[in-house]
Length: 396
Image (cartoon, rainbow, N blue to C red; front, side):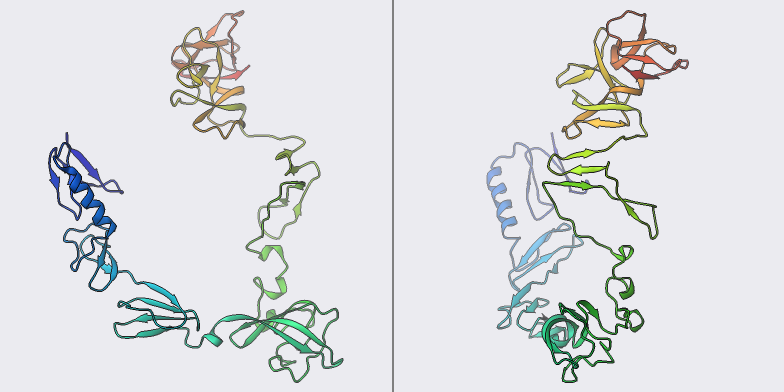
């Protein structure tokens, strides 16, 4: 019996006959009952380990195959299943250029924070051309109040040489910067002084820099509005009571509201509410079944797992639910939801009238029974249609 070898994407690569070898790729595939297969298997592993290291590329590549070109000391990949292209190496080094580079290799100069590429003879700078002015930075500094001559520490946020924001914890507003300041120009950048907290370049007397083109979290004038925030910081807790938050409408500038009767206890992992409602109509619990069953199947305890489809004379515990209003034991692996209470469609045998008592029947179905039967598990809520497979019923 031949082996059929399929690629990861499902396409067939080759049909491998018994006691034969296939050499349509760089590896040798072994058919069933081939004598001396051990050497072939071991050589395949060796080729994978060395990435087919050779002076010439593999003659029969497939898409995604790697080859180590030991002439240029470079790993290469076949993107089309025919040819190989080099994969550039990236070296992070601060003192000197990388040893034995190949064409296309990248070097991150960690001393100067610059990226270069090797052209076969030398490393050519990619950028930035002047790392000292081309990147953002935080700079600790000290400023002086021109009126009181009081000095105070600040942290400046800069793009290149431009100061965009200043962080300060001064107790009072600094209304005028000393002319001796080397990078704050009073009326141009921070003419209204520096305040405790965050001060943006070009702010006016109300603290907005929107008109001057300096923004923080969207726009400076809206920096503290929740509608402009794109991320929030989430922290975990194992204790305490927390209150769930809801928006007053789906979109727009809306209020966030809480209620003391709706809370979560992190110590007990219990959600506390006064009342809940659901769109669907049954209470279900997950059980392991001996096979997959469609919704409406009558279920009893038994089979090779916990539950199975009913047969005549069984005591039903419920019906396979399609949309549980409340699902218990949700984390049970391989479990299926069984409706234990509430309204669900039930598979039936024969005709059923509204108010009929239902008991388990063969093939995971229910049938009507006269009053007094000890194994009634549901009551029909409607007459069944001619040749109907399901009837709406309430599980008792």
